[in-house]
Image (cartoon, rainbow, N blue to C red; front, side, top):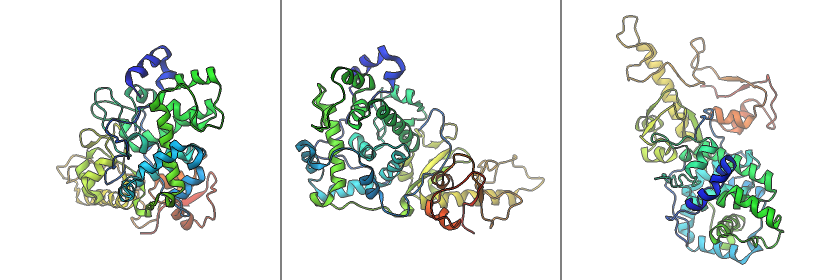
Length: 415
């Protein structure tokens, strides 16, 4: 949003206005089509629990799930929506490449939106804001793929300082934004007004509703006295949803994601350079940095966030490398060793190892088990243990996703 206008509306309203909309489309975002996101896809006052984001369910794909969760108008509801959809897909090949690059993050965001019962169109919101790029914040400017203003980030509980910027943390920022959108919808009962509130501010949207009442279903783009950029924000969101609804109409193909490419968050036992983490995960450093851009000094600092985002296949390699390191350090440690307690030969702290590390009484070949606690779901357990929902169902002979407190589940395959 325009930072000067945002500040004028924000100051008289303290906290409620702080939870207002994030920035409008950044200046680096060209009009004809969204800018290409980086090759790989990827926040935190109170750091969320280190958990692994669930890969997509076994049945269907992200596009089917998105279409099934859409709650706003279709392609033909407004000529402006159709016009923007055609602008986005003017070059089908370029559009498909951009979507393919953004797809890991888009898929992750779609799952978070579903968890918070937010309309599927908002999983496409980072496309409108940033092209799913981790845009760094400078001098009070918006940042991250959601383009969140610093004051808004503070109100949302996202840590922002010179070492770490939670607005660029894929996991925490997605969760914070979806909570905000869910709250807006509970207040306004209209997803279009929810988008206006995100773009221009909660107080401003509430004032419009008080003056004009909730907008009728038609026209789809409400005829309210709003800025052009706010009206266009909603139009673009509906246009991207339009392309997802009817890709053949625009002569494009929507790419798919293999299970190994789904993003998960992996618990960090201790701080480490991102370069070392990338090496242990067997992935390019640039890709890991793109997915974990919140760490500003190229150090994964567990005091800021105790996890790293990675694709599933690299997450498993990273976890196994940590286990091997811990086992090697333990075997090499002698009673008269000069190494400090808890410090391995590599110089890494190996005392704090991931939750899924076998205990001293447990054979490394043992299967890990988990006793279900009240409120836990199969999806949450899949996130925590960096596995898929389908794997948990298969290992435990589950036909659905229903689990009960006290139930003991297998959460890893036999090694």
